[in-house]
Every structure is written in structure tokens, then in C-alpha cells.
Image (cartoon, rainbow over all chains, first blue to last red; front, side, top):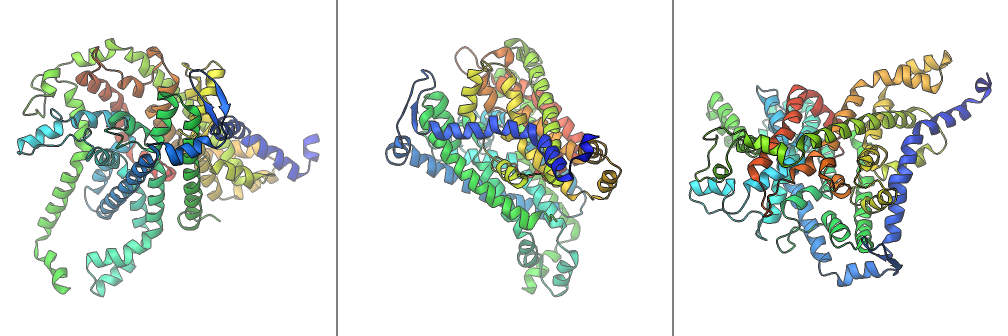
Length: 299
Length: 287
């Protein structure tokens, strides 16, 4: 009886807050507090094993930008990894999508096939590849030897390691982008392409002048999703190269782990984590705005 | 221009189709071959997996690797660990995300936009950002080397936020008429959510369930950091543990264990491919 007399607005407030309570309390404990802590730690010299710490102001940051012999290498590797990944992933995804979105026999079968690594665990996928890519006795090089090619040490040479990591990751994840692009391609009005065909445009022209511009927003979205995802490469790096050889695959996410749990410098690792956080935060808001504008038509 | 347009037409139709399928099959090799190699290597002897020339099928089928996989470490136990952790995480995420996703979509409450943007900030946050304080908190509570952090952090932390977004996106597009009618009939928010909203949300709920289960089943970083006891390991961590006394990987045993871990997921995927693919397309925030 008493509840009925509460005004609707108050009821709404109460219900809303109760409904989001589990998520929000969790957010405070496992996201907000940890992020604040990471920011605070980043101004400390703190050791994981001994538990000792002291305030050192901006020393971690100034060390990062001026003294750390690895940091710029990490930045360069991360950029190289992200851009290499985006170019290979998105162009392959687009290529596959353009073929497989058609209503031809067997297209669904191939879609399933190209998607299957996406559901496979990264660890399993990476272990199989690291088995196949060993230098001398590795499967790939054994097959290459059959046709008279001496394969390189795919994961053990500075020239090939990063490329191999990118390749393994692209094959693993390209199916997801392919599916998103296929969905977009199915929404391209058919009569538009037909009309261009009647006017004498060939397939390539139709793709370049009509289809690509129509799905450009989705392509952009896919690029940003891939970019954000590329920040999260821990499993691949850890199990394929552990950042080597000669740090040629040392990227930011792995470097945070390395500093925190292998050298126990959690103060400095926190400063690195703050950098990672800011990059991803900026990209997330960029993506959200685009998605709102172009992809989901919310009321 | 006319020439380039007519050139492909010169080839007969069946030949162009043939080229297309041939090309697709060649392209499929790097996607399929790892599965093939993983499965066949697990039946080979240690000698044969490095044999030259390489053998596409085992010369003789050996099942010892599968037995060794279970005797070398408690793989059966680790399998069960992964199973129950993933199920617990999935159940928890479904409850938390459907509740808050519904509230964000339908209920007008104070601070809704503020809370929403706050959540949004963690939508795609890599776990590396918060892993240090989370580890220290769990250590303080005495929960390291237990499964507690592997269950509660994915449910309540940044990992579950994508599910809330999916649920919100779904509820926002749902027509309001039924809910309005129920409101007039005097049903409260809980009643509307439970009796009307939730029963209509089977598709997004199953999408959330599929993706959450796979994420948890495949998770590597958190178990690596929190667990030290082999009996408490989850599968991905266990797979990296087939190392002999000299530090060299026991490849054939490892491939056998990897096959056992990948097989149920692949079978499920093949049986429910449409739904799995749609779930990923719906979430489309991971990649």
C-alpha cells in the first residue's frame, strides 16, 4: 500500500538503482578502484615481492620517456603491430566478405570455415602455430624443404618474428571482421549496383565506386575495433616469442606484464598501464560515437 | 575498358566458378591446416612429428599421448575446473548484465547517463590495465591461488560490461507497448522485467552466454597470474605445462591435450554455427 503512494519518479529511481547495483558495485571494486590505484601506484616506486614503496612523483614517467632503453622500442613495435594487423586483417576480411556475401553455393560453408579459428582458444591456436613454425624441424619449413626452399626461423629472427605474430593473429581473428562486413554488404541496395551495371560498369568499378563507399562506415568501425583489439595481444606474444628475439616483438600489453610480474617493478608497470589505459579509453569513445552515428540506428 | 569488362566473360562460366572455389580452398589452408596438424600430431610418436618428409597422416595410430596427457598433470581435474568456472561466470554475467542492461534501456533514473558513460569507459579495457591492483586486492583477501578471482572479476569487472551493452542495445529496440500495458495493469519494474522483458530476450541472452562462456574457457592471463597449484589450473594454462624435465615442450602430448580442449568447442560451433556467428556479430566489440 505504501509503495503505491510513492511518486513514479521516485519508484523509477529506486528500481533503476537496484537494477544496476550489482554491476555498479562490481565496477567500483574491480574497475574504478583498480584504475585509481594504478594511477596512484604510477607515482610510486613499488615492488611486488618486498611490498615496499615510496613516493617518487613523476619519476616513473620521466624514466619512461627519457631513460628507459625499451620504451621507444615498445612504442615502435606496438605501432608496427597495430598497423600491420589492421592492414592485413581488414583487407583480407574485405576480400573474403566481397566473395562470400554472395548467394552462391558453398559460401556459407566457407564462411563457417574462415570463422572457426575465432571460436578456438588463443592458447590452443598459438601453441599449434609455434609447433609448426619452429626453425629447423618445424612443419612449415619441412614442407618448404620439400619444394626446395630453406625457410627462415619464423619466430626466432628479428626480421620475421613480428610478421609471424601478426600473420597468426590475422588468421585467428579475420573471420570476425569478415562477418561484420558481410552483414554490411547485405544491406547495400541491390538496384543501385544493378543500375551501375546497366550503365556499363564492370565488377571492379562497382566495388570501388559504389559498394566500398556505401559500407565505408562499417569499414571504419572494423578498423577501430581491430585497433583496440590489437592492444590486447598478451597471449600471442607471451606464448610465441615472449617479446623476443632481441625485444623485436616487445609490445605495450606484454611490457606491462613483464615489468609487473617478471621484474616485480609494479610502480613502473603501473605507469605503463596508465599509458595503455589512456590510449584505449580515447579509442573506445571514438568508436562509441561512430557506432552511434552510423552503425546502430537507435531512436 | 570494354575489353577488361569482356575478358572474364570469355572464360566459360563453369571455369570461372572452378577458379573461385580453387582460390577459396587455397586460401582456407592456413585456417584449416593447424586443426588438421594438431589432431594428427596427437596420434604420432615424438619421432614422427619431426619426421622428414612430414607425414599428413600418422604412420601408425598411437593413443599413448592422450593417456600421458592425463597422467603427466591432473588434466581431468583441470578440465573440470575450466568447465565449472566458465559456467559460473556465464550464469553470473547473464544475471548482472540483463538487470543493468534493462535498466539502462528502459528505466529513467537519476544519474543514468553518468553511470552509463562510466561503464562505457571500461567497455574495451585490456585486463593488463587493472591486473596489478586486482592482483594486490586478491592477495590481500587471501584469494590468490583460488578460483574466486577467476569467477568474480569477469562477472563484476570490465569483462562483463560488453554484455550489459548488448542487453541494453536489445531492450532499446524492443517495442514498448506490452510493457506500457503491463504498467497500467499495475505491474512494478521487477514484474515487467521478469515477466515481459526477459522472456523476449532469449536471443541476446544466448549470444551473451555463448561469448562469455568462450571468453572464460579461453582465458589465459588471469589464471596465469592468480594460480600456482597444478590441480587448480584451467585448460589454457595446463596446455602450456607439458614441458619435460629439460624444459623442452612435449609436443605430441601437448597436441593431444590441445585437441581435447578444442574439440568440444568446435563441435558446438559446427552444430550451432548460425547462432555462434550471429552472437559474435552482435557483440562485435571484441577483435
